[in-house]
Image (tube, rainbow, N blue to C red; front, side, top):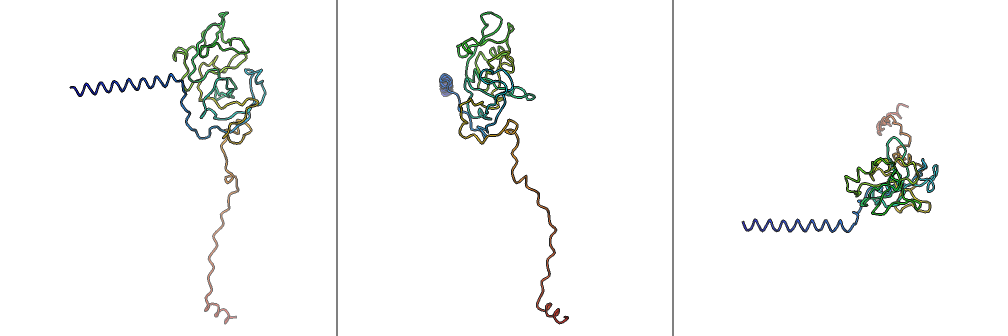
Length: 245
């Protein structure tokens, strides 16, 4: 009985130690290192901005460079411009990452009570010096994730916004979004291509097209009929031929 009690006590101490270690690591706020992924970062391609959500920063029709698969091996940072695919049936869009994995957020009603503001890590989000305001007096979709997650983004979730109304195809209407649907990082005007990224492709379509090896493009070799073996002439055969002549 004494040995059993001693085992239970030691086991309890071990569990308390592990729980304390997990708490300490969480309090440090260090993000886990992203595992190495083949093709990360991917090639850089050009993309044409297709809406007015980023007008003033990126106008519709502007051409930007995008590093494909950048976030497969790099964390999303607040303020990053990203290319996000919200639907398989439509082209992706450029948006700003306003909250990233590990961030806390809180939705609050605007002062006029007809829309919503958002606090990121207890700070009110502002654009051009004014509180970011979206939606209507109805409860936004983002509130569902706020309640289920207690207002904290997990390691696979981000909040993306445009900077101009009407806000659509981002977190104002779609809620918290999966980081796995980010196509790549949009490079700013003076930002260089990250080291290790492959050569540039021309378009998004080209960057997603399968590679065709040069050998596959060569003309197929025609099969030739095998040649009949020649009969070797012996010395006797040659002598007989000469006698007949």
